[in-house]
Length: 126
Image 1 (cartoon, rainbow, N blue to C red):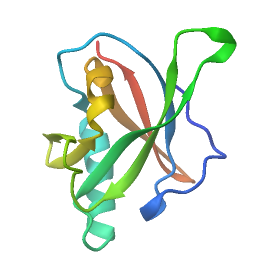
Image 2 (cartoon, rainbow, N blue to C red):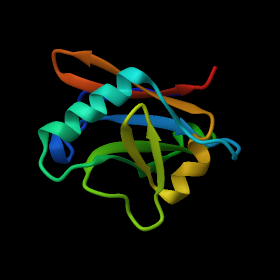
Image 3 (spheres, helix red, strand yellow):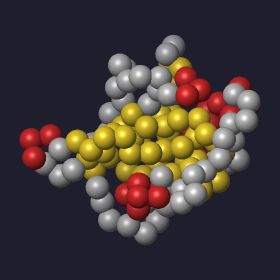
Image 4 (tube, rainbow, N blue to C red):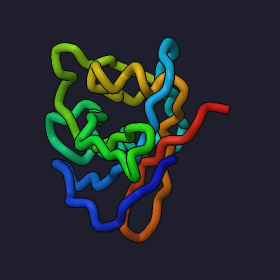
């Protein structure tokens, strides 16, 4: 289950994105589409000292006592945190918070561009 919330607060660099993520099994790493990579490169080119984006778990959600989900925040970042997983794909750099990396193994990071800007989305890998 993934969703973008239009009323989420702006993150550093003006990136406003949240998704819910159901916990899953481990092993592979997050994939990045070419469109998402281009959006990330546009972000890094427009903000001084920013080298990529960081994905981190914001707040756990458990609607109606169901399987735990997390709100995932995407923010501009100058470098990865000490234990972040670094993903370099299509020339873009994505830093994934260490505890979250295991749960993104079967996901793809994509982007939708509209009048409000870039909206990153997570989906299941095909």
